[in-house]
Image 1: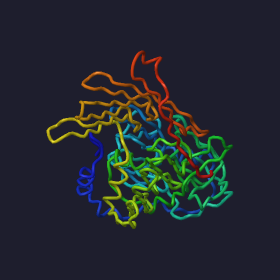
Image 2: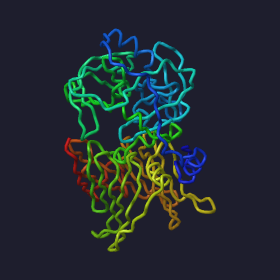
Image 3: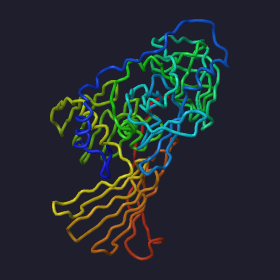
Length: 432
């Protein structure tokens, strides 16, 4: 679980031991209703068959504040399929049946597939209507008629009709022209027999009827996990998102560091530099669930040292990068505070405090809602010794490429700032 001081290896280790992750490679067998081709159903018949199994997925942060909503559907008693991204940074999750006032809290995340953005939520079996039949094989083809059922912008039980525009094998996605709007992701895409052939995932905002879903056959090989909602919610956040980068960023480089991400947004390589020389480089390799299985550490001019990571270590490596509403502190053995970092519910750094014993100096850095530095104040023995303010130049994607620092040491802090430094950041992108 995620506590006040964030996720730690110790906590995750205990959770893994209690929940028996050693058995996590077991496959989830999904019994489905026998699928017999017959006369195509009408749109009204599709609605009658699908809507009772459709749900609204609602998430909250640890303080009970609403975060997001999405769609989902029962495909087995007590089990709801939806998108993993619907859980991002959530601490609690609920499902609501259409036309009903009551909601049911998710007991656990039964299984996940990070690569295909899928997860299965477990709720009380008493909440289950008749589950939908799921296609067990990859049988969809371009030109097939389909219906998308979901809850766009909270409008419960909406249905749209279209066709499979293309099967994008290289992306692992199915392109459809039936509408998928915010709130519809996680909903079922059904064929004319009312069988689920895909799970709605995303759309291209600037495209015209360019929408995507993942093949429902992926639910047959979903890995069984039995994890709390907040752990799955952390796994739903890529490294690129956690670093507050916008667009399909491939690499970010400054004079002090460089990070390279794969096309899924996870960290492939991280390098730190000292006086223009490589100080340390770390490379990562991932499994199908986007968990690191190996890493290579290269110090200075030494040869790379390979480290194989267990399932537990791969999980720890991912979870420890993600922050929720929390304050991380470092204290001396006597309890003296050395530093603290406070994060908001979106994982943005809000305030950082650093104390040194020499001269009793304290530095307090504050950040904006994007997690970017805006002001740093220095104090000596409780008296302010200086203020540094930061401003930015952005690229067309909204990422900063220049950071300007101005400093104030005396007089009126609003009029006596003068430039002190500029940091340049080189960003490259993957092509869409």
